Image 1 (cartoon, helix red, strand yellow):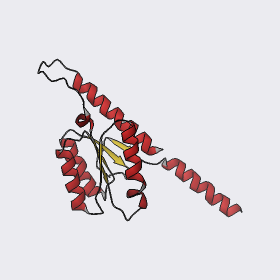
Image 2 (cartoon, helix red, strand yellow):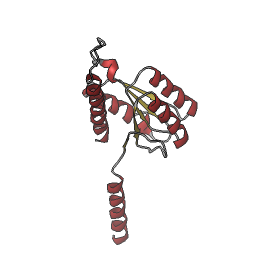
Image 3 (cartoon, one colour):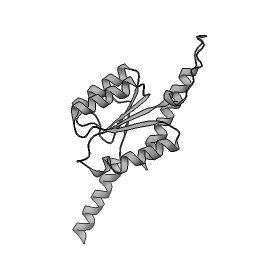
Length: 161
């Protein structure tokens, strides 16, 4: 469910950016328009070892959600390597993505990528893992309060059974 929310949130960010691009009094001849390239999203997943979801569920579910929203997406996996993570990010930034979604390997490498994206004017989203001191524009994760409540209820049930 949070993958669909992520796609909708990204679509909202792209729409807001597109509307801002259409505004202004410039007569430069540009239509400020969209097109597929104007709204491309980059997603960097962390690895294939810490959780199966990074190689099985998330890539296919995210692609389906973005396709359904009409948003072009480039999803890549860093395979647990900081250099690969940075190289993927650099490529996505230079290709002109409008939104960059990352699942960081660690806060240091995540922050470096977020800083580069910000300098390029790209909206950023931390997905599932918060980049400490990273300053992403958005953070999408599970409802951690609800997770804690359910864990507590399970513990109480086990202790009373």
